[in-house]
Length: 442
Ligand SMILES: *Cc1c(COP(=O)(O)O)cnc(C)c1O
Image (cartoon, rainbow, N blue to C red):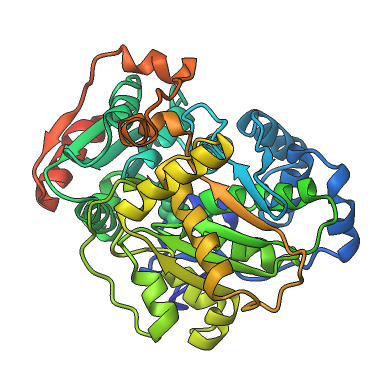
């Protein structure tokens, strides 16, 4: 399998090359150049398979460089936690993607990617420097994923004062090969600087850089796995409508990729907070990336969603086709708080603010757009739950009036001392820092 660039001006490359490069040399994002279609019998038989078996089957066609055995090992080691589908009522389900070590769905992408990188870089002598911008959860998942992996250094850029206390503790306490850079700016500034680093040829001559953001295809491949597993757990219900709380749109793009493999889906709902660039595009056909706004679902505070480029590519740039497959909507913080409270009071289920945005989107769809996808009467709705509520206790507790229990693996990092490097919002400062700190490692 070769991967092509969304901009179409770079050579097709293998999975290893696409993963280790991150961004294609023409500035585009890598995407599979072909889509093996899994037969109906695969999707029918999926209900008897484990998450790991489904993951293996979905990953296998994409990664030529890894032997069957190596791929099995990576998956079994990376995806060593569950992704249960919890039924809320007759038609609504929550796919809990937060049972990994950092309590967010990003563990799927980051853990798989770290292990794939470690296996794929064996040929290379040079240390690999992973740089990633984070709006909160990516950083901790990447830090945990790569922690202690030999030959790999990790550098995380996060916006100072714009991540929650727990998120900051998670990304600044890993230590070892992981450094957190606290940038005086927004997430979009962090992302811009990371992109600039990748397109800076003098820096790339001196360091072997790679990205761990969802611009990296090695994160999107493992994010297809849980879509397959959601289907397995629905056990033969009709094809679901999948509702994805979205920011940079990696998660939703992975769902579209799974659909390209033939996964039955009636449609996708793109749920955002006030950063409604994609819902606006779906409605109007015009794409207006802009600065992000800060909200209580901060991992979705993205004003320039990178993966839109992949979505656009998958629909051949055709707005109408995209709009037939994806329905979008956005919500304010007040609506999100009210939804958290309502769900808790009705069902005792505690949602994190990102999941609450997805919940609102399903409600709105059912009230105003029922039948949009031509779905059946019994079509189930699956909301992807992207984070454990304990990560957002400071938002949730005042709303529901109860304490949110903190799992042990989170409690541990809350006790450690924060360690970060303050960085100006200026690319030349980042470049100097990277060279000063990592060039000696060659
Ligand atoms: C990253 C994140 C999102 C957004 O996912 P994208 O793939 O960037 O759209 C949503 N919720 C949580 C909790 C996240 O960490």
